[in-house]
Image: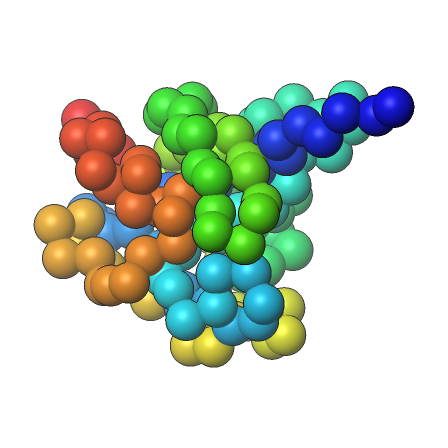
Length: 136
């Protein structure tokens, strides 16, 4: 009998001019909440490569200085459970585009870390409440 296990997610907090990129989700999972770009870690993929790939797939941008921030344990009310690896990166090039419109309700926005919109996706909320500051 196969046991259920948590999924592994990646959140990428991209820094540019003292701000972080966020967007509002739509759809079944965490719809109506704000989040950073992110997704699922693929088999054999490094955290840094996953962060670069997800940002490219979701926004069309390139990032640099990609590194580990922290990790959160996110048990959603819809029965989903993720361990989310929160990565920090700097903007390298490109303008944020909505490349997965089926997943985004509102366009990507650069926001001050101390003025993040609500409600936030659980992994983002847990990261925000952890006290970790992506600018330190």
